[in-house]
Length: 184
Length: 383
Image (cartoon, rainbow over all chains, first blue to last red):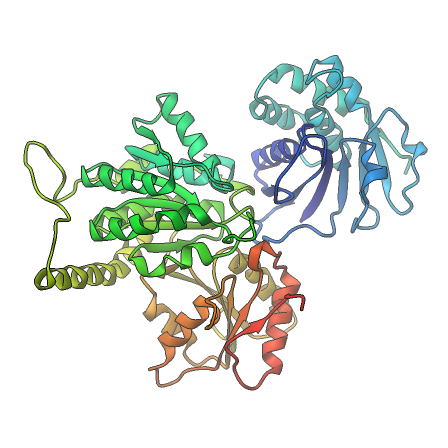
C-alpha cells in the first residue's frame, strides 16, 4: 500500500488533487482511498489531503501518520508547517517551486521540483495572484511516483475539473515533462 | 461502473438509483453534500423527483411523512442536531408506517459545537422504531440505501442509513455503481397497501384510545421482528443480483477465534486490519461487525459469541450512567444463554478521535490482561 500526503493552502485545489489522483489510479483497477484533513477549511490556510493506493480493497479507516511520499503545492509551507512529519525514509518530496531539487536539503528524503505556478498561470488556471496548481502538480507526481500512465491521469483531470478541462490536462502534461528529480 | 465517490455522494447515488420521488432536506455539516448533489440531479432532470426546501429538519421529516403517506418514495439526510430536531417526527414516521429512508451522518452532539464523528446522535433515536444500518464503507452506503427501500416497503417501517462523519462522508473510495436496470429489477416501484388519495379518502393517525393503541404498538414490534428475515433475504438477493451479499452482521476470521472483537461502522473496518496483524502473530482473534442494530440481530450475535473465551465490544458512543450502547445490547442479548462468555466494553474515539490499528491491538491486549469483565473501559481518553 502506498500512502501520500498533500500539503497546500485553501483555494489551491489540494483536496481535488487527491481526488483526481484517486480517479486516475482507480481507472487502472487499483483500490484507493482519498480524504482531506477532517474539518473546516479556510482560503489561504494550510490544508492537508491524503491518499492510500493498494492492489486490494483498503480497509483501514484511520488517518495517515507515516506517508511514503509528500507533495507540497505551496513552497512557503515548508517554513510554516513541518511537512516531513512522519515521512518514511527514502520518500519523495515533490515541491511546486521554481527552484532546483539541489537547492533543498531534506536529509534522508529525495526531492523533485516543478514550477506548477508558472504552468498554471500559462494555462490561465485560477488568477495570476492565486493560480490553481493542483492539476499541474499531479503531472509531476505521476512522473516521479509512476502511480499510473500519463494518459490515464489526463483523462481523470479532464473529467475531474469543473472548468477548462483541456487547459488543465495540458498543464498536467507540461509538469509531467518538466519535473526535475534529484540525482540518484 | 467503477467510480470514486465520497460517502455523502454514495448516499445521493443510492437515492437516485432507488428512483426516490420526494426529497426534503435542510443543510447541515457534514451532510450537506448529500442533498446538494441530489438537488443538482433533480434540477438537471435526471431524476423525476420533487425537491422540497424546508426551514428545518423537523419540517424535512414532516414533508417526507406526508409524501410517503401519499405513496411516494421519500428520502432525506441529516446529522447530529438536525436528527435531534427531527425526533418528534421520527416517532411519527414509525407510527404512520411510512417507509422513509434517511441518511444520517454520525456527528457528535453539541455543546461544545463540533462536527466530527460519534454515534450518539443516531443511537439516541434507537427506541423510535426506525431500523438502523451502520455502514463500514461507501459501497455499503450506496447498496444499503437500495436494500433499505426494499425492506422498509415490505415491513412498512423507516430505515436510517448511518455513516461516520468525515471518515466516510468526506472520504473518497472506489464504488461500483450498479446499473439502473438491475436496481429496477431488484427494487420495484413502491405500491403501498393504503395511501392518501383524494379519490378514495381515508383517515390516518386519528385519535386512538386505550382499546386500539396497544395493538398498533404490538403490530409495529411484529413488523420489526419480521424485518430480520426480510433483511437477511433481501441481503442475499442483493448478492445474487449485484455480487455483494449483506447480512445483519458480518463475521471475519471468527472460525477458531477464542477472542472476539465486536464493533460497528468504520471502526469495524479498521479492526479487520488489526485482526490480520494479530493473526500473523498467532493470536486466535476474530471480528463480528454489527451492521444492523435495529432490528437487533439476536440469532447472529448469540451464535457467534457462543464458546468464545473473551469478547470485547468497542463503542464510539456512550449512554451516560451505563456505558457503551452496543456493549449493553450485546451483553443483554447473551444474559439468558447457557454458555455466555465474559464481555468487556471499551469506549473510544468520541468526538471523532482517530482510532488506529494499533489502538485496537492495545484494546485487545488490555482485555487479555483483565480477569473480570468491566462495564466501561476507556481507551485513549486524556485524564
